[in-house]
Amino acid sequence: MTTWLPNISSSSDPIYLAIAKAIVSDVSAGRLKPGDRLPPQRELAQALNVAIGTVTRGYVEASRRGVTRGKSGRGTVVRDLAAEQPDSRLRVGPGGGLVDLGTNVPIHAEAPDLSKALATLAQAQDASRLLHYQAPQQDPRYLAAGAKWIGECGLNVGPESVVVTAGAQHAIMTILGALTKPGDLVYADELTCPALFEVAQLLHLRVQGIGMDEIGLRPDALRSACRQRNGQALYCMPTVHNPTSTILTAERRQELAQVAREYDLLVIEDEVHRHLAPGAAAPISQTVPERGFFIAGLSKAVAPGLRVAYVAAPPFAKEQLNDAVAASLVMVSPLTVELATMWVEDGTARLTADRKRVEAKARQALAREALGDYSYRSYASAYNILLDLPEEWKAGEFANEARRRGVALATASAFSVPGCQPPEAVRVSLGGARDRSELREALAVIAKILSDGFPGRGTRM
Image (cartoon, rainbow, N blue to C red):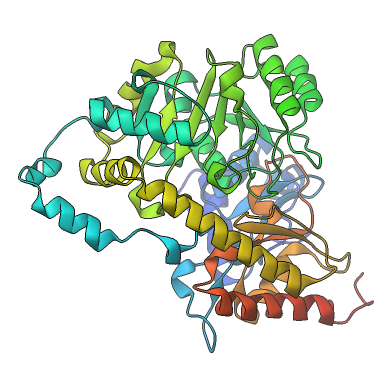
């Protein structure tokens, strides 16, 4: 624990805000470093002669500003943003710069030919209509394309069930924003997509992590949590989970559906990686269509710049979701929805997803070759691996060392639900490299760090 004490004597802000600003300022100045543990709230309250609730509010505000986070068993620590959120703009490649293997990049080299699609659009007599106000989420053609894509992701629905959103994260926000209220509890895997944390924070929702095993989310752990606390929704990624790449079995999906029915949970089923394992079991939403929200995004399968995802929603929620879409951004961009529709209709989306899966499988083979006997979790055609580190390494230190040598990684803590203990592991995004050659060199860097061991091996206290 650091002996840090905030200098708030000259601040005119409320004390809690002055504490938060002091944390932010000292992090920026380097007086507080990544991994530093802030004083326990009671101790700091005594040192400053203020109420403990004032310190608590200050710590919460610092967390809201993204510079700290609660760690199970460690209190409040300074986040290692360089390790958690590598800056993809810095990726230069072999010979200099940073190779971003920290961001979940869906292999941009296999994206569709945008210039050809735009040329086709330009030749349409009514192309200018795509610049007008309209409601793509209610257009029959766009809804039909959404139903087709959802079907290709494993769930057969009619156009009347489809809601068009601006990407999967917007879909999550739309569902939770329409159907929950501040303070409600959302269950999720103890390691899950960070987008959920951002949405929950914006909507003032609580998130509780649920235990996982080698298959994924555990129904018994979910049932136990439901018995103890009244939750409103379950968010899950059943197929090629991020970051562990687990795939729930048919039996496991049925069990989760049963728990959802028993405890009246909404099920938000995020299947943005479904194209990487097209033979996966039937969606949970197929078993519980009255409470299932199936998200079929195009970002990971086709191109993230599209910002289009389709939600298969129960009848009771369809209009609520459409209202939430309109309230959050007026309309999903007609231009991007038109592109998505064209590519779904003519098969380009499906072919692109297939190409990305084939390339991901080849990159997984490179990872196996480079990392040999080192332990990691993944799936044969996943975009990522979750590398379990030797005991001598802390994830943040490993990520910092990799960054120093030119490779950006994401620590498991970036995916950890607050209150859960993340493993000492890093996620390696195989799609972040521009090609296989660049990936091979970046993986060699990671393998070399593992081989070299922690600096001063054997001296860690």
